[in-house]
Length: 220
Image (tube, rainbow, N blue to C red):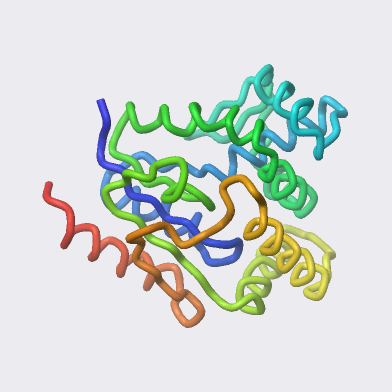
């Protein structure tokens, strides 16, 4: 059975994970963080000492790995990696592995399977363009690179990281370039998506706007 799907895409630092999680909670929908799956895939390849840029090799590692997402966290081969996947290193590796066509294909079925379980809010970089192109409602969040980097920097510092703001901004701009220019599933504004600029909005304001739009456009 295919349930209602709402997608929320956009580059890093737009607050989409926090917003999508809260939108799902408010609506009673399941929340799917597709970015966490790619981060988990990067962990699997790193732990297997594989080449993060080897399409076929990385995809084989991912296919063999056990990747689970539950209310308790994200698990790779039985190990809780919930905190690890949010480190700056895994963020960078996940962007590289996400550019590999065979890895994306290996994870596509897993992502789509969540739709069979419950109405869904899916968040990522290609949920509205590739994973769920027939989604009932699509959103695309954006903000200036400086604002997005500042949000990411503050998040890392709050967790004890000693990374500099300049480093975070540089890595974010590099990731934006990779995500937008990759041949497979590049970061784009999905067709018919509602674009929300979060530069001057906090997560609560964005959440309210999205929930209001969903309730006005979808019939329950």
